[in-house]
Length: 146
Image (cartoon, rainbow, N blue to C red):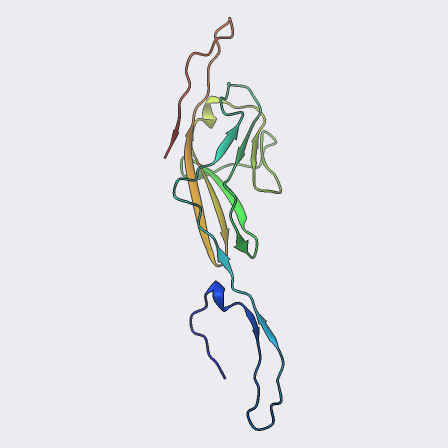
């Protein structure tokens, strides 16, 4: 009988017991190791469009990761959970964030967290917006990775 005290992804597979004296095999057990693959250190959420104007519809995408069981995605703005109770900001089934109308209160550091019971990984970036003058020329933009 084998006892694995620490499991790694390489330990996944089928396990069973076999008696030495008569070669009889017991039940087969399939071992699946739960994990969350870490985002690369240079990963950050991406925004579409990349240059945001106040009042525009914006979609934020979290970097993709592998996870078993599948990861659940959460979004934070300046360290606080984003309020999804209104229809202005929604989270899609794939974990992306949709902001129906980008406002001044939406400026800040966005963090997306991918997690399951086995672990978590996160990525951050700062997002600002462009203000338009009456002649529609951009005044400023500021986008910086954390």
